[in-house]
Image 1 (cartoon, rainbow, N blue to C red):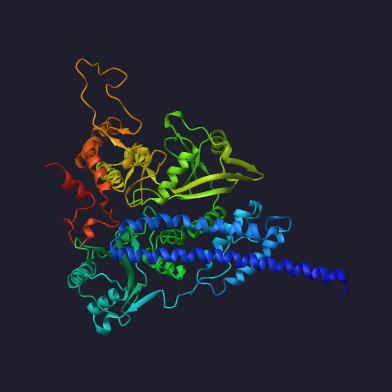
Image 2 (cartoon, rainbow, N blue to C red):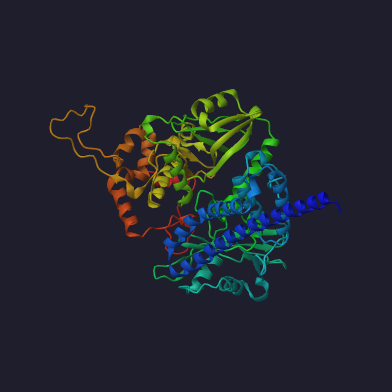
Length: 606
């Protein structure tokens, strides 16, 4: 055989060996990440058993950064060990790498997440011109349909064999909680009574009656959740059972969540992500889609802590929507922000936020500090009162889908973040949040009941954030939004602070003879000083709004209330902001609070 042919064969073999080695390095990086991910969930179970609730919170926060660390490690390893990975031969090399990588995923238990890891590493190494399906996984290559763990993802129990009570006992025992229950018979009575209130007798049990329960509890803050569904013939009833510690440190079943709204709020992305041990995450997500059917796979992957794969799925869904819509991106309605330029696609339920190059001097901040605030929110427990954030770099939008007015605003306000690239607009850094109705616009159109409900929610949001050690800073109504469930959440983060870093003060009385019309105050004001009684001056100018707010939240205008919350946080005895209504609780719950218009009538002064 000619020497030249032999040389070509050797080059081909060497290139293939390099591609195979890079693929192996990539899968090793992902497997290391996922092993640590599962270790966090197992540690959460141990901390829950021991009552180490602060440790659970630390785990949830720290885990968010694990993925980026493994991506950086793997990219650095590839750059160090394989000199051709970014050179002129990168085209052919990365196409080979992807093919070998797919081969490694055939029997893998987390192939979809491993594909996302491949994308993250390769996009860190390659230029954005490589961001298409030949070099990265724009579309999934390995199906997760029917993929399951061993033992299976969920366990099935059959009440017709030995009775419902015995089945419930087996469900709890199979979770292997080492801490004892305070009164398990009472808990069983509570569960059965709650189920019968939802499904009153006669309850006809079909031959196929079974209870299916996911094999791992879901941990968040102070609570473990058992998640499952009852299958009775053609009827399926999802449920979640919160398990907590009582005052003596023993376990108790705290509620039975059956209502679709309660379940949707439990799995809201406006809360901290769950810690849950999953060998096959796709099987968990498929199960959860029957529990909360209004949630997308992207949202569910995010809620079980796989937020990077959730981001990947979200972006795929976004590209799909762009291909199947024709409307144009516009400046988002509402009062223009001083820090962000915000735009939206009317047919798409999200907003896109870009930090301005020139931030108004009144804000006393800059790009770096704004990014730090958004990172704080990402890592903090959002207690159902702060929207989750998706952060992207180098996002390509079709130029034809931008209105001229929007493009003009972006190029005027954030020119460093906008690049024209042929028929595309590249946005270098963008935050994406679910679109909400701004509270100020909502109040303009609200009837008296809607207004009263929204203002009670608004005050609850401020108070619950405070108990989670968050002071929203700018409390103007325009910085809060109303969700489809009627909940009020905060979404403008450039002025948030840890509550314990703020100094809450009462305004001292003026000295004798002081002219109260003078421009300067008679008392010194430090950079972190906040005077809650001033909230009424700029928030409650409308008499009807003031009356509705003061009915439930007058304490928010008193510095002493804020100081008491600070002392509670400093003591380490931080109560949990529940992920479900107080009225759903079995133990120590207040009388059920009226809902809807009856709630406003009940709260009205007599």
